[in-house]
Image (cartoon, rainbow, N blue to C red; front, side, top):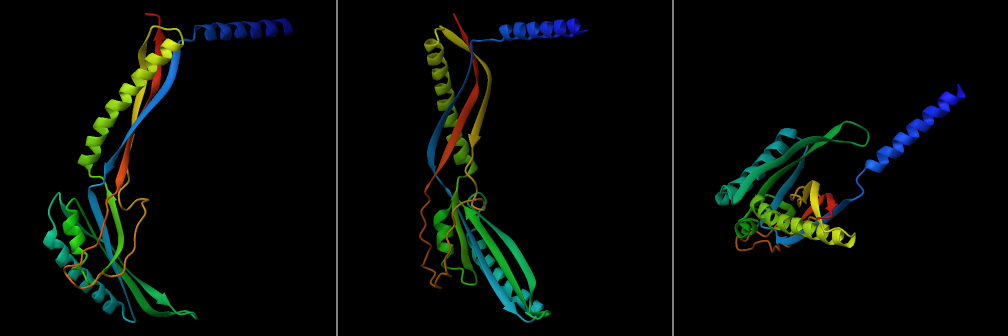
Length: 233
């Protein structure tokens, strides 16, 4: 019985070594990355306001009035593809006294304005007086991001091939063939995502006063991962 077990183990071990010998030893795993800094071209501003009172209906009416006033101004500059306007969060909830029971109501409303016409959006901040600025952020438009990716992916693939040829030569091979490859890109987030935000008090009522803004840059990266088979040709 022991001889059979021992023989079986030896057979499996020999098979394992035989399989290991057949694995390609001229395969090389590598990666290459390229990136470019692109100026953000979409400005997004979130306006918000809060109201408090003892009557829920009154608080809701005040919020609606503030939102309607801000919407009226924002719609003046609204333009598909250039300035998009939409309402955000609108909430109303009770305020409780220390000893229990409702002693009032608190509500908030939000307006979101985003687009490529950054000058018009910045000037809008001086005309909206019923709401304050809650968040300001820049992002990349889809067109700007895709254009940057198209340029960077060419660089990443070229670098990948150059490294494959260089490493194959250093290992004593004359060439290589490309095996399985994946191409991944990193996309900068939108304004609502994890991005530093700025808070401001309500702008003055002067229509000539606009918000000073600076776009900054976003990094678009592409990484190529995969394997190549080094050849003697």
